Amino acid sequence: MHDRAKLNILVGAGLFGLGTGVTWITFASAMASGGRFILAYGAILFGAVQFVVGLIQAFVLPPEPIDKALADKDENYRFLVGALASVVRNGRAPTANEISTIRRFVTAKEGIPISEEQVREATLAMLQENEGLIGFIHRKPFDRAMANKVIQGCYLVMTADAPNQRVKEVLVTIGMHLYLIDSEVEELVREAELSANPPGTNKGVRC
Image 1 (cartoon, rainbow, N blue to C red):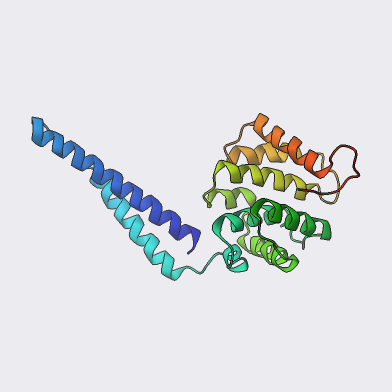
Image 2: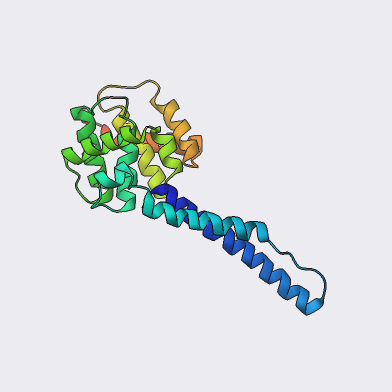
């Protein structure tokens, strides 16, 4: 199901339920003690319309490119791969180091291997989305654990080929959209740095 359809169905159902709930509670109170009640017809009507629109979109809109590329994986897996693939979507194919980093990180965090071809397909899918990581984040549900994975994975991918002086600044901005404060992002980056370069070892990407 397309993300736009999911969002409209969820928001529509929520508004309809909220409007109905407010109307019923205030009506019951008015019946018990007298007085007026609130008829939340705006929320009820708007929610119903948005819900129906979402149902129609679910049948009309094609699956998202990232969902097609990783059709056999669950939603969390697709979210993580899509987020990491989006940071290498500057109109080019991912490098060997970026592919290796994504494969190792996703396999370590999700426990399910991803092939080199799937990484390439995911990157192409994010190019087709043409919205970048921030837009992708705002269309997908995620929890705190996934937000942490996205920050650490993006750091490793963005530094897979060479040090990036602006990576921490970029990740702080991304963190804001993941509801993480600056200090939390900085701590996640430190952990990622240690995983990539454990003390006493040569530089290499590890998870």
